[in-house]
Image 1: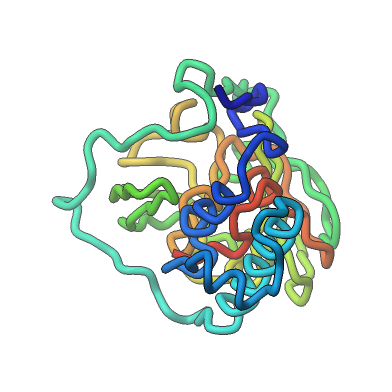
Image 2: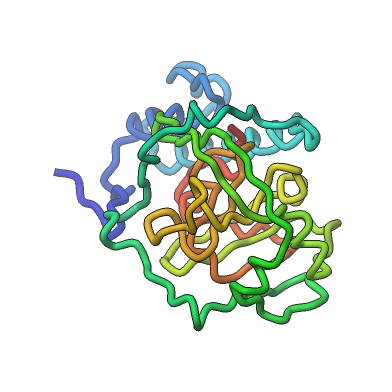
Length: 255
């Protein structure tokens, strides 16, 4: 039986090298994957050496990140849908059971700001809700192979970044959440017109299951790049990584 850690992740020291090659496809490194022979030809590595295979996989993942970033069009919009296409109920998905979703108190909530931001004064929910709000009906695409369409309402993230004086020439925006989750996105995606600080789903204030008090909706990226229960946002030139990204998933992860 394979050992798992407390988060359900496989103990990598017990995983055979061939399993790492399977992960190559699951993590969408090259979207269509590579055969064992192709991996050997590209890397010149010994595929019986788990450390060697892992280094090649990480190298390919980082290369794929660079390619996706190079072809990303900051002006191209993700498809939008009519209300009749909305998935009801919208699926819950996290690395824990729905009953374990964090419950954040409304009264004491303050969004912390850090890094390359001029005004780091924390934002209350009242102040966040006062931002101009828009709605979008877009598809959430999960790396696990499913998708669902939802209606999301909130503030344009670019508007928020401008309001706090974020350095929009910086490379990354990072997010810390009320649970153990964290992630980051590139600045071009942060400034995309559909990237949204989300307060509502289906015209209702986010419940704990869907990310109360605040989530980021990024329809141009895979679902795990849409953090929920956000408690801190920071801007930086150093890649902050992410919960799944630090375990081998593609960092850019465009949808």
